Length: 153
Image (cartoon, rainbow, N blue to C red; front, side):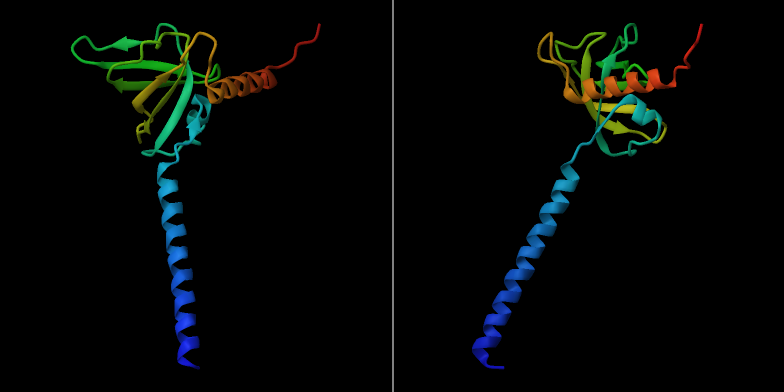
C-alpha cells in the first residue's frame, strides 16, 4: 500500500471513529435527560422506574393537602380518577396550586412506593390542563367504564 493511500485511509478511519464517538456521547447524554411522564394508574401498576427522575401528573385530590406547621414540607394526593398517589414535596408551591387542579410534578418514585417531588408545576390559567394529564385522565375513565359490569333490566 502506498503511503498516500495509507494516510487517506487513516484520515477517513479517524473521522468515522470521531463521528461515532460523538453520536454515542450525544445519545448517552439525551438518555440521561429524558423525563418520562407517568399517570398515577401507571405507577400503581408498577410501570414506572424507581429512583429515576420522572414526571407524574394528575388532579390534586380535594382534602388531601397536608402542610407541616414548622417547615415547607407538604403532602398531597394526585389522581387520574382511577388511582391515587401520595406526593411529598418540600418547597414553595406555585401560586396556582390548589385542590382539584391539574398539575405535573417532577421527582422520583422511591423503593418504598413514595413519590418525592423536586418540582411542582401548576397550570398557567383557568382553562389549561397539561396534555399528558388530560390524556391520562381520559384513559383512566375509559378503562373504568370498560371494567364496569353492564346491568340489564
